[in-house]
Structures are given as structure tokens and as C-alpha cells.
Length: 364
Image (cartoon, rainbow, N blue to C red; front, side, top):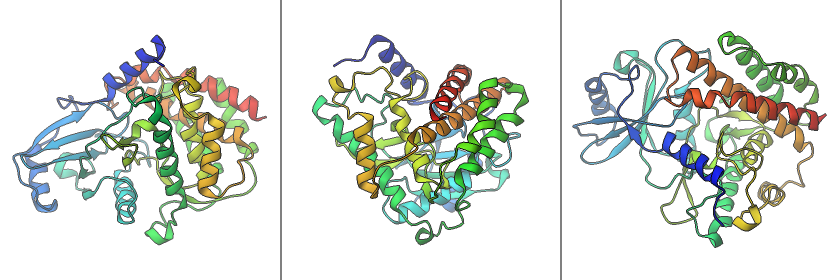
């Protein structure tokens, strides 16, 4: 089964916008000699000369490829200039990946964190470059028809494995505030949305800010959550249905696992021109498990007997995503966005606000 023309076009645009590297963009360059000197004193086995390029993807934290004659690395940095309080905390990204890697969870190896602005102008960390495949299209079009369920199983098992880990045993008991996750997250994203006056206000978002706190389901759980668990934030084995590394831990914290899983499952509801989504795809013809089966598999892996209040978890995540895209819109208007495609992404904010408001009505 081939993709429809619009879906195929969206997937191609997504890959063109995010895959591969380019010359380091103006405003995001730094003193490469200073970086090489830091790496020589920090990264075991480092030997120059060093060549720096910038990954095309990354709406928030600029990400660079570092090549030497012997091996390659990845650098993620806090954007230069003024940033919103609490945003772009690359030190947290480095910390959680170091802890997860120590227990065999699939992440890239962290080589070092630098918080000295004299090196490249902002905080950064360096990790291994993991070679493999990134799928920008949630239909996995380059995977054999019979193998697609195995790739969905691999994603499902990986997020379930994350949620089964004990934060305290990994030294991450203080990685976030335990309990009351939804109230805190709704308040956080409401503040960020309301603080960005340049990006403007939307009556649908205002309604969500008002209504969501009163719809939080009873009960609470706390695990490590990724916050942006999507197929295009994973590196898969070059030939096998196996996740080698989960990327982009900027939004990770201690939180409610059902918030994290519901965000991941939004792929079933999401148009493919916004993020990797399956909305409008013929799942049966593509041999992709339907949403209900995918949710059931996660429940089995985590010992759950179903997920009550599923509509709330979806509404919360659509609101959160809309708030994130509102932030991209603001950075694009200020000229501080790390991706050259930020303006195109910012245009999706109104679509997400509408989807979030529709989900709110279903939740009610």
C-alpha cells in the first residue's frame, strides 16, 4: 500500500526539512577552536581536526554534528541570547541520558556537559553519534509490509520499559516534582503561552487554560517521562526493528506515564504535515496496528487493565503541543528560532489549537 499523494508530500517535506546536516547557520556559529580544546580535555579519545556542521532539524535546542578523522559526535546547546526561564535545559538532557544509559536503556552515550559560556557562548553537551535509521513518516513506508507491526512493537516496548524504571534507583528522584503532574504541567504551559505576547492569544487556547484544571482524573503515578516520544525522535537499527537510541530529552521529567504514552499515541490522530502522524492513513492496508490494539499492548507491558479517561490524556497533550508550537511561533517572530523552517511550523499552531479544543469538547 503506497501513501496518498498529500501524505507522501508531507513526509518528503518533513524529511527534507529535518534530515541531514547543513553549514552552521548565521547566529548559531561559535569558536570551533575553543570547542576542540574543551573536547581534548574532556572527551576520552578525542583527536582533531574537528569539522562542525548543523543538523537541519531541532526547533528548540540547536544540534550539531562533530566529525573527526576517527569518529563522530553530536553537540546539543542552549540557544544563544535570551530564553524563557526553565526552557532549553541541556544539563537535564545530559543527566537523564547518562542515568538511563547506565541501566541499558537505549540512549546515546554522553561524553561531557559544559556550563561555561566562554567555550561556545551557551551551555552544551556532547554525545555519541548513533548510526541507524530515523523514520520521519509514521507509516514506515520503507519497511516491508510484513515487518511494520514489529516496528510499532519496538516503539511500544521502549516507552513501556521507560515507564517501568524506578527514578530513585537511577539517582533521578529529584529530576522533577513527584505527584500532581497534570496540574503543574497545565499551569506551566499556560504560563508559557500567556507570557509570549508577541505570538498572540487564541480564544480556543484560553478556553483550554480555563477548563483543563477542572477535568484532571483522580489518582496519580510518577515515572520518568520523555515528553516528546515519537518515531522521528528514535534511531532504529539499520536493518532490524529495534530502537538503538531515543533522542531529544528536552521535555523529560518525572511525570505521569499516561500523559507520556498518550502523547506518543497522538500519532494516530495527528495530521502528517504537523508531526509524524497517521491521520487519514489506511492502517489495515498498511499493516499497522490500530490505536486500540496499540493501547492494549502498552497496558499489557505495564500491567494495566485499560486506561480510563483516555480522552482527557489526549486533550491535555494536544493543548501542550499547541503551547509548544505557540513558542515556536514566538521564536520565529523574534528571529531566534534554531530551525529555518520554524515559520512553516508556527503556522500549524492554529490547527493544533483547534484540535485541542475539539478534544476538550469530547472530554467534557
